[in-house]
Length: 287
Image 1 (cartoon, helix red, strand yellow):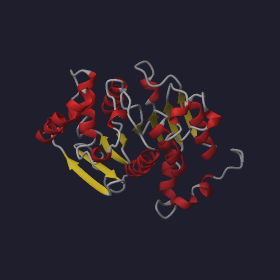
Image 2 (cartoon, rainbow, N blue to C red):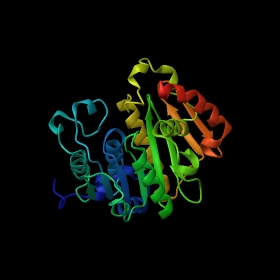
Image 3 (tube, rainbow, N blue to C red):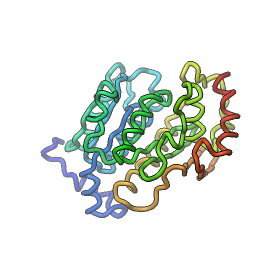
């Protein structure tokens, strides 16, 4: 079916009931920026495109490789070696041929961040866990421009959700990574993402996690859970419906443990409970 014969209203008509026809048109007009088209990013684009969001800015400098197969929405034998941003843009347009998708094949850099965030209503964080410099740049710029910035992290077989927007806490106010080396930044990031640490009790091969070498495991189930939670959060923010609790609130759901946790950490990582958690995390990251 070509873009000329594509019918937006029919394509997304099964959303009606959970959204009104007018709200569906609002979603059609919105633009979402997603940095990272791997595990969670590809799932986010697919889910938000099926929600009927009509405009995207997507960024990734990487290509699909065989080790992406367990979790990444665009990873198929037919896409090995292809740029992730090209593959996922194709999938997004295959869902909605009318979608306006702007691609940033070099990733997000200080030189293109203005263009990446141009016209954006919500930023969806999907870059690699260890890409701390780029993540800090993105969250800082979003905060300065009043763009809500949301992150859903795939932890174990679950999801941890956080959001930042003025006048609430900024990324830096919550995580407090400024002035620390990368290992301490990683410790503070994982502590802030997952104050409840629901995933830590069922890691059966601890050697798979190596923060010095910047590698760790991830599951497809967690990525899909992230996409569902993120899609719902984006809907709430874009339509002004329901309640989304920004930082210092955090949410974590773990499907393996059948646990749901909401945490409130005033002061972010300066909170005494977070300081205790950091004392537990640091030895594991530096081991």
